Length: 307
Image (tube, rainbow, N blue to C red; front, side):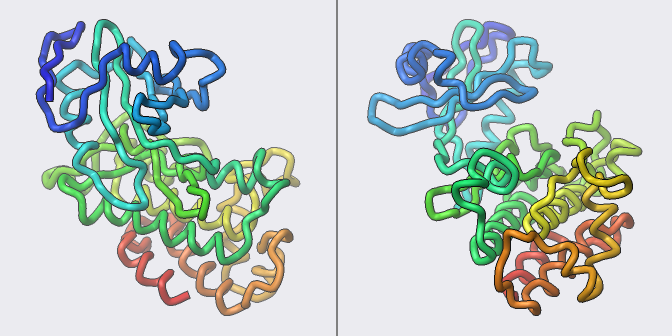
């Protein structure tokens, strides 16, 4: 691949990710037109684009004051370009030119778990039970790959319903692990970092100490599982007092038939009760306050396959 100088540090990028020119990216996004914006995060804007070969892409333009230097960015891109799994959004390439840094991802076009459970897609097509199970299993596989099978192993740090994108057939693709941290061996117990996650999804030990564990992602996954079970948001201030936080409200309901009848999403019909019990038990284990009581994602995958 071509060697490109960073404006900031003049470190040429010589890695394996495909490089796009700024001109190509501008063409794809209609000159970064406002109408092309499909998302905005702490790291910059995301634009919908169409490449010259008609590939539809999501272009994440990183903000200029991004704390990473060129070398760190190159290392991150290298890590991202090595991650390949059907339940992860795929990095297609990058653009580093003048003062612009972009990551170019495949475009996943059917919204997110959040939009289907709580947002714009919820009215048109509420997710049925089979689809929710498919999403739960696929997302668990994506996370398990990051934790256990990728090299280096990766902690997501900000796993949530809006970061699980859906294809037309509802195959889930985990996204935004770009700010994921590699869990290198000497740090496999924890990574001290400024807390990056999203309110309502952050594991208690991470929120309190800034110590990030693989099991912190497991907690966040458990919150998503509770969303899929209940149809509720992780934090909802419109709920009655004491019920605003999903985990606090759901935890005592997960272990009894009466509790599950209160918990289950009213939009779901005819869910086999034994299915509900199994998924509730998995969710309950994932959101345990004590880290050592939470399963690994590989174990979650195995348990979900038995539902």
